[in-house]
Length: 407
Image (cartoon, rainbow, N blue to C red):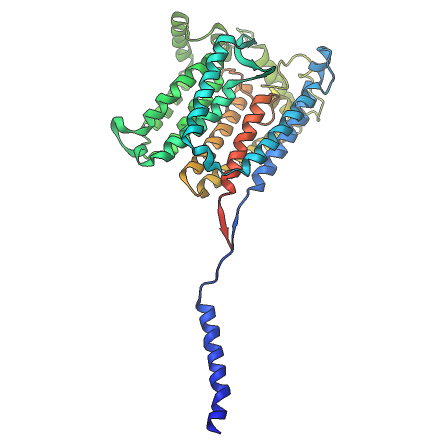
């Protein structure tokens, strides 16, 4: 009888013990791969907004050239759609494939080869030879060079990160700068703004990669001093450029027209400033810009931000800047959570590319720096630029897709 009474009690205790053990054991967490839809939707939104602004700013130019009013809009729509498909395909590919030595060096030498070919048999436009035509398709190799340098720099940094923090001649950053030199010189001879962007991308990536940041601060201080004393600096540049032939006449004229817009008849700059000033806080209304009706050259291209300011005012301009800041923030977030160094610096490189180009474009149209002919990412008209930027976003999304979340 005693045994019978003890049985249920013992079984109950055993159940309690089993429950306590189960609670003490760590639960197996499910792992899923992250995908940054916020970044994807932000890029789609800014591209769609760009299409609207291209349609608004290019109708007049298309009609005076005996083209359909939506000619530039349709062309950009097709290219943007193709770019989005490319981005989605790349985002589903493991980005580590692009770290293969054959792929990295292949992209580097192909971009250098195309830049050399552009020098020899390129198509001239607006006094610059930056286009090349292959199999009936024309494109700008300078845009491809930007992406290849992001890939190359990320590869070099991730291959031996400890070298980045050595002092003296063994510092790996100098080696990257040396490899950057050939494409940088070729790009600068074709498009000064693209050369500045490539140099800026590599510098930002190296600044983040190394603890030896003194040289970067020195360069920054020198840049600020040069900007403060820009009139004297431009005088020295004019003398050096005229004696050595490093700068083309149109490039020197742009620098001088930046400082003396009235004296050098900086027509495009002045019309852009008129457009910005007439926008006010809320703008003249979508499609109601007057400057795009002839006075403002390249309204749908380099100067499209001035049309945004005129039609949508300060509110529209700030909204566009905030969207770009959100895209940059998402790239930074992906870089900080990347599973490896190569993926992290891919995202950093793309972030640097977008941010530098946005800053340069807005600085140009507000006459804060000389007019270097830089486009506004995802918004300005231009097929090669949109395709390459979309491919870069695809790489960042691929990095995000390798981030593991436990829940």
